[in-house]
Image (tube, rainbow, N blue to C red):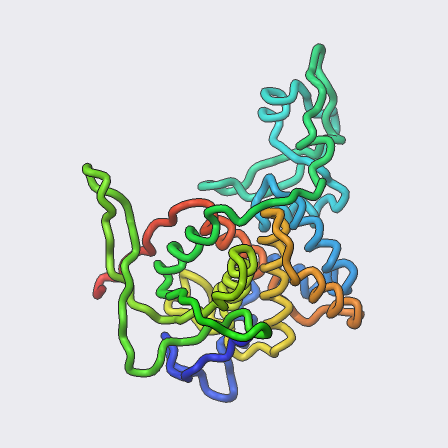
Length: 322
């Protein structure tokens, strides 16, 4: 899939030849402990270890991709984790004495402690464990449902316009900057008024994402996820460093492996067939080590696209001059 910008004019000026945004971002390792761990310990540098991580996160669906990665880092054999109060309330199980807690990120807070099912024991009259606990990695067959419409609508808040084009069978989609000198806006729904009429705001268009209208709904969704992965991993730069990083200047292999990894995670967790698994298996099967990827960007991009596919996202904070 083509991700090269149609114009060198993007939301931010191009860096000089000596230092790319990717170089600057990579140097800021102090704020990115997970990527530092990835580099220093080589825990996931082998192709097999990295692929095992992806498969684990892809099937560890009850937590975000980022938290699933944290669980795998601490206990690769974990099957189902939950905090002590959930184990007792929902499953009638208590934590075994001496069990080792796992640390994950808490929504709207710092961290929380969870325990794997093997570190719990049933209380008296505890019910049998449901399939979601006993067999959490079973393959599901899903449908795209409303994910396609939601992700297209939510992409608007980041200045991305999704359009369809009648392309040949070998073309799935592409993403690029809008043409130089062209400033357009599109409507983004931010809520509803008292009469349930949509409240719309106008968002400038910074990127165009084109999909092949000859593809089915599932294939179009997979294509959009892949192109969004390039965007949110920073491969095309960023209009705001607080939204996602500017990592222009990466090699083609790094860009494609990161985008395919995000696509694999999002689609497998949704139960959707996609070609990313074949791409990754083929690429990683020919390489003993993976290129210097950003685990942080991959997991955060996958989590963001997953949320965009399930809920109406809020508008990005408006800058004072906007």
